[in-house]
Length: 146
Ligand code: DQA
Image 1 (cartoon, rainbow, N blue to C red):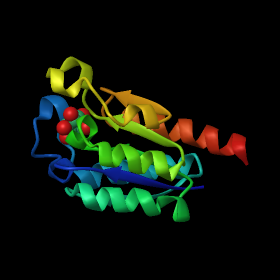
Image 2: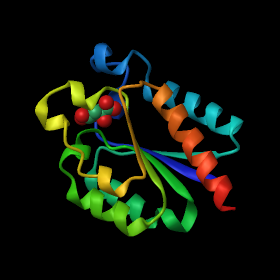
Image 3: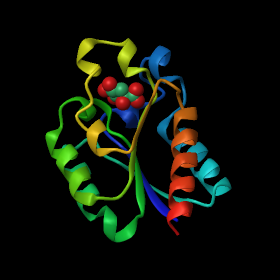
Image 4: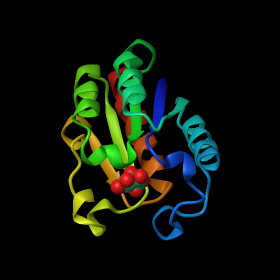
């Protein structure tokens, strides 16, 4: 099964962001970890990062042509991008929302996810293990469909 793993704004700066929330690994380390775990559960990942809302929306619009599911860490867009929310709704492929940090233990503006309702699962505060959980969920979900 082919899936796409999307990272939104400022996640390209992992490794330089607050280690307390995000750890010390870079995005490319995180992506290697995800690819490795995905391989174990027979998923093939394509990675996409953008700081731009428009690029993320366009990627999600086209995603159903190429991928069967998405994992998305939309960064701060999580909290206010109705455009990304609408794109995920339109895509109609399963999407798992992942956050490295616990968004509910942080500032109030992070407690709301406008994409949660159009994702089939939300994982928050488990660091990179959250991606393992997302992959396990999607592997199970896609294999039960096939
Ligand atoms: C984040 C949480 C968001 O609130 C924040 O804006 C990010 C990263 C996380 O992975 O914990 O950029 O999505």
